[in-house]
Image (cartoon, rainbow over the protein chains, first blue to last red):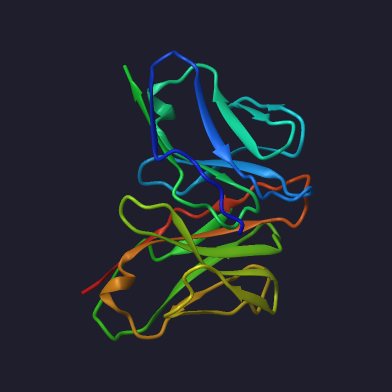
Length: 105
Length: 114
């Protein structure tokens, strides 16, 4: 099963960090973990990916558990423009329902 | 560089009609895939392709056909549209490379079947 498990929704205050969790307990040793986000009325866009080590880019950080059964997408300072649906996926194909992130001003 | 282009952006069909949703990419990506997204729901995989001449079924393939005769194009065919196929359809493409795994999505086709 290539599905991942994420909370349905989360809420954050503007300018505060947000930690979005993902469970992928059946992940294989060679599967990358990918994160995408979908802004309202748009197609999904790539955020970040990783295999074993924690990763940083201009959009976010990805923290991967040592056993690789879970990961956390970290938005360091949430803005209103970060309000979106965030998807965690193991294989770039199966996306699941994702987490709706609401950001309050 | 246009990326992934989907046409049309909007379409209204009558029940029983057929149509083809077009998807084209100009990045020479091996992988292409089709998704549907119902209101308030996540993406569900319909069909995908790992290269020209190779296609496979996803989570919800019934009622849809695909073919991949070229690397660039991956059309999705609805043979006999049903109201249950009212949805937003997204096409995506990506490389096979593990070092560049990001998928690129089109802007979607909003389909209404009446």
